[in-house]
Image 1 (cartoon, one colour):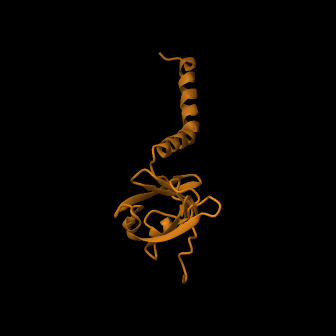
Image 2 (cartoon, helix red, strand yellow):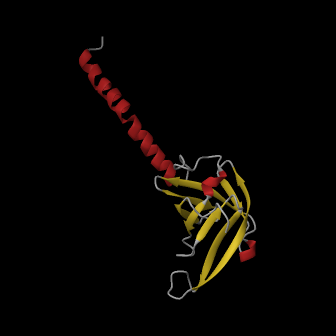
Image 3 (cartoon, helix red, strand yellow):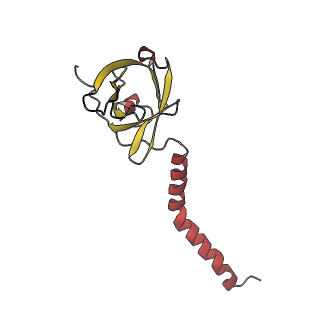
Length: 155
């Protein structure tokens, strides 16, 4: 037969795995985030609510240049600089492009053609912990800094 002494290591292993469950789940979530999988949305932004995109963003391809998404107004506003937006005395050229569509699955399509970009660039709202933003299909990631892009009221 099987003695109690030979079962002790199995009991300890089972207890260790049971108590590590939440830790292992967290590690799996962190691994999913590193692969770009969308995780739970931050407070005030939930799947199925197009307003999750509303906010002010930074674009690493245009450092210091403003970017704002306003789904209700179906517009993305921004500015590009010459030579750049961070340089002292930079001349900013403001622009507004239309939001072509927003889906409850967390995707947005924007028409950047009026400023020389693609006509239907698709983006996905994603993030992890305190870093949330739009991952564009060209690989760029706009990080959202706040959820208030001045999308309500008159301009």
